[in-house]
Image (cartoon, rainbow, N blue to C red; front, side, top):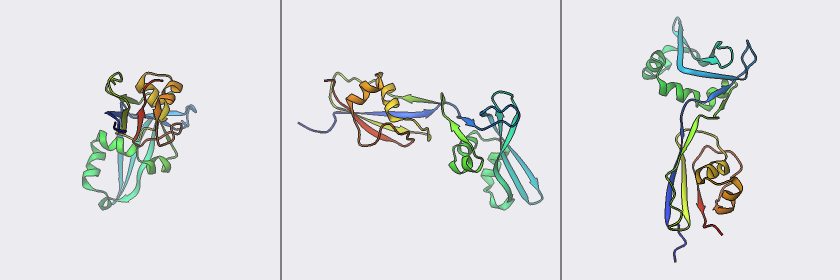
Amino acid sequence: MSSQPHIVLPWFVRRTRLPLLSLRCVDCGSESATTGEGRFRVNSNGKLLHVWLLVRCVSCDRTGKLTVHGRVPVGSLDPAELHGYSVNDPELVASTLLDPLFARRNRLTLDWTGAWRLHAPPARLDEAWPVRVEVAFDDPVPVRPDRLIAQGLGLSRNAALRRIKSDGPLRRPTSTGFTFTVMPED
């Protein structure tokens, strides 16, 4: 009898929209902002460029700017990247927003509530045991593994924790892939 799992299921955590930004509005004091359609503003001052990502307050609709590049020489930017800023490339907006250095520089955090979905194939758990699940992340969505597993299996968190075996911690948020094994019900 083999100790290896008989079934391996792939689960994917995918972004459904850009996350909200936890950022205090200077007008109304709200703590939530969005990038909306995702637009950049590029301004030149001689041979120096300023690039900002435009954000909008969710409560009062005030527009603000977050610094992407401040006073950088035009030649220091990749031409394709500069073109992406001028045409408001959605992929460049997403990669800029998900960049941890950008978040640290602009003193913001990302609010992923409702911005992701778990794509899990239906498990046929009545055939072979144990079942090994490999979870992969397309974007750095911070989720608690125990909540994700419970959602994917359609069980309560306590019931899910009783039925799984994992090498890593399950109650600390992660945004990197992990694996776990679902054991048969006792």
